[in-house]
Length: 126
Image (cartoon, rainbow, N blue to C red; front, side):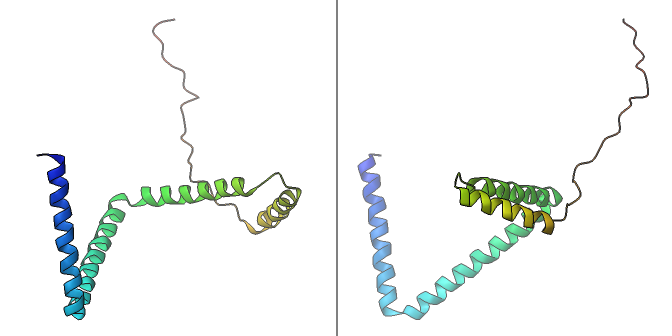
């Protein structure tokens, strides 16, 4: 099909939809509001179900990722707000002192994997 024909059909459908919407709005606005509320409620329920399924599917990995992303964003924001101004540097030093006092160090989420350093390899070739 020619592109001009397709554009004309799409334009006609949008025009008919707009005419129908305006006529319904003028003749029965309460019905239109009910329909919009029903569609919004259905969309909200589908969205909540999707979120619950995805949260269960991702589980601990997603929560760890979200926590790391939040920390990274906080670090990036701290870097971007600092400027070459003397006032900004003084303010940054002051906030660093107060934040160091307030912050408690969280335990690391990394674990150490024990290796086999004590054992010697049994090598056949020298």
